[in-house]
Image (cartoon, rainbow, N blue to C red; front, side):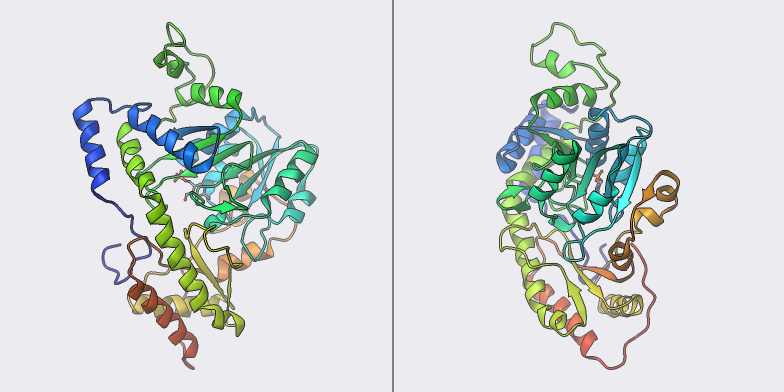
Length: 391
Ligand SMILES: Cc1ncc(COP(=O)(O)O)c(C=O)c1O
C-alpha cells in the first residue's frame, strides 16, 4: 500500500480512535458488549433509523447470523448475485442451503429483478441483495417481489454504510441487513460488522446466537438471574477495541463519506465525456448525497483495454484494481451453487471493470492526476498491452 504514489484506499484515522483505545486499556473491559459496543449500536440506530443494531465481529458473522436466524435447511435455495464476495454465499452454504446465482443490471451491478423472479422455485427461501459500491436495484420493487413470493429479503450492505435510496439507508429495506467495518471499507474498525433489523424477536434471538447461544446479554442487563445455553450459536461479538475505533469512525462518518462522495462525483463528471464517446462505461448517475463513494468503477470495452489501462495507471504510480472472480465461476461456487440464466453482465464486469482510488484524505490534486492519466490513455494512439490481473 505504502509504495504507490496514489494508493487505492487508505483509512482515515484521527486522534479520537487513539483516545478511545486508551480508554478501553485504562477501563479494563476489553471483551464484547461493553460501553463502546452499546454506544456504537446506538449511533448506528440513529444514523440508519433501524430499530435494532447488533455489532458483530465482521459482516461475514452478520451474514452467518442471518442464515441461522432464518432456520435454513439442506435443500433450501437462496438467490443472490454471482458478482459478490464469498461471504455472501458461505453463510448459507454453511447451513447446507444452495446459493442460486443470477445476473446483475449493467447500470448498478446489483441484482437484476427479472433474473431474480425467473430463479424462484418452490425451494426458494430468500434473496440476498448485495449493495455493490453503495448502489442497489429498486429496493421497494425488490421488497414487493419478496413479499409476493413469501421470501426473506437479506441485505448484504457490507459496502453501503451511509448510502441511501429514496432517503432510506441500505441495510434497512430487508428483514435483516448486514454492514462491514473491515479495514478496506469506508468506516473502519479493523474487523467488525453489524446486523440490522426492525424485528424485535429476531434481534433478541440474534443476541443469544451472537453470545455462543447463551442469554448472557439478558443476564448483563439484569433480565435473568443466571445465563445459560439456549440455542446453537457461535461467537459473533467484536471486542471493545474494535468497537472503540468504530465509535470514533462513526463520529467522523459525515466527513469520511462526504469526501468520498465528492471524489466519486468528480470522477463521474470528469469521465462523462469518455463515456459519451463510447470509450468506457460508468455507473448510473447518483443523486448528489445518496451514494457513499465506496467504489468508483468504470468498464472498458474489452479485457485487453482494461489490462492496458491498468498498466498505464500502475506505471504512473496509481493503484487501480479489478474486482471479483464471479462466484458462479469460482471452484466453490460450482461445487455448492447453481446458476440460473445467462450471467453476461457479471462475466463482462469480471473482464472489463476497474476501480479507481478513493479515500477520504485523497487530495483533489490526486483526483486530477488520476483523471488526467485515464484521459491521456484514451487520447494516446498507441497503447501498452498489459495483462489484467485481479487483486
Ligand atoms: C459484498 C460483501 N459482503 C461481505 C463482505 C465481508 O465483510 P467482512 O470482511 O466484514 O466479513 C465483504 C467484504 O469485502 C463484501 O464486500
